[in-house]
Every structure is written in C-alpha cells, then in structure tokens.
Image (cartoon, rainbow, N blue to C red; front, side, top):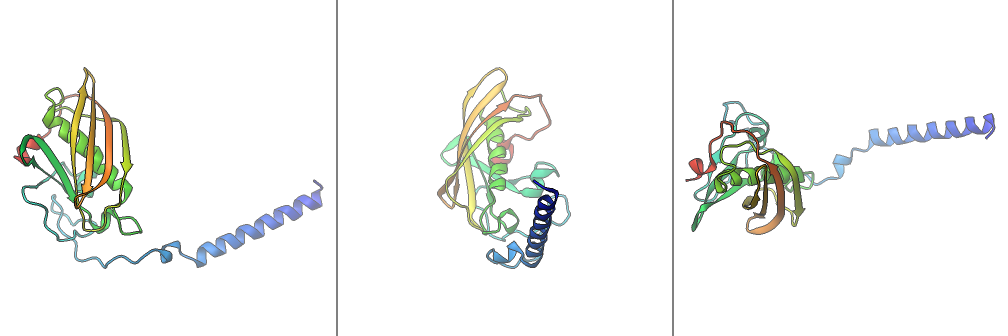
Length: 207
C-alpha cells in the first residue's frame, strides 16, 4: 500500500472511531431497558449499617431463619435463610428473596447472584450432612450450573442439595433450586475439604 493509500485508510478509521464515540455518548443503552420499580428506604444490615439497596418487604416461608455469615461478600448479597427439610430432619433447605439489588436490567435474578446462592447451598449442606466435612472450610474447586428458568423480582428462591460422595480430600454434591416452586437451576459441584474453622453449623440455626 502506498503512503497516500495508508494515510487515507487511517483517516477513514479515525472518522469511524469518532462517529462511534459520538454515538455512544448520545445513546445510553440503559435507556432501552425496562424501567424497574422505584426503591424504598434502605433496611438496616446485620452489622447495623444501611444496606446498599432495600429489601422487598415480603415475608419468608415458615420455619426459615436468617443466617449471618460475617460482614463479607455474603453479608452484602444476603441474607440467606435456612430451615430443616419438612419431614426429613437430616435435610436442610436454604433460600432468599429476590430483591432489586439481585436483579439484572430485565428485572429478574442475576445469574451471578444465583451462582453465589448455589456456591453457598452446597458447602452449607455438606457441613450438616457429612461428618467428614462438618466444621471444615470447603473451597469450591468446580461449580456447574444449568439455568432452567428466570427468577423474577420478589420470588422466593429455595434450594436443597445432596452429598454424592466424600473422599479423603474432596466432596461431590448436587442440588436443585426453585423459585416460587418452579425449577430454575440445577447445580453440581466439587469442593476441597479444608482445615477446621470457626463456623456455626446450619442445623444450629435451622433447628
């Protein structure tokens, strides 16, 4: 390519880039998404500070009690609730109410929030169901999630998991998550059996 041709090409690319930047400045993609309901006043968080966004104010199903797992990532995205599985005192169910802060631009539960819930459902269930994992840190090695259906704003999301196999250093699990009774996610995971740490067993809060 000659110098004149190269200069012409660079000039055209520059004009195209300026046009793209002008378009991005003038058009906000968020304007094309559905408007979400207005938020109400923020509710207090477990540590006494204000949550970044409000709760829906809807009650949780009977028997579920909130689990406060410190002031880190889960505290910001929770609360999560647990209870003993009705008719099965050895089982545990875990749930949360979909709030505005859990949703994507379409007003349904964000996939990242569902993944966070699944990533807590499996180890918390393992602490209760398998003696080899009770009271131990269970870092996730692998987590696979099949998203089956959306979980709308205000829905009660609930999950239950099973321990498939426990080895000397690993625990294999699977679980099913529903939203208002409709299956929304299937999860299976592999976790490493780590050291003992200060943890309140789920059955102590869910009993």
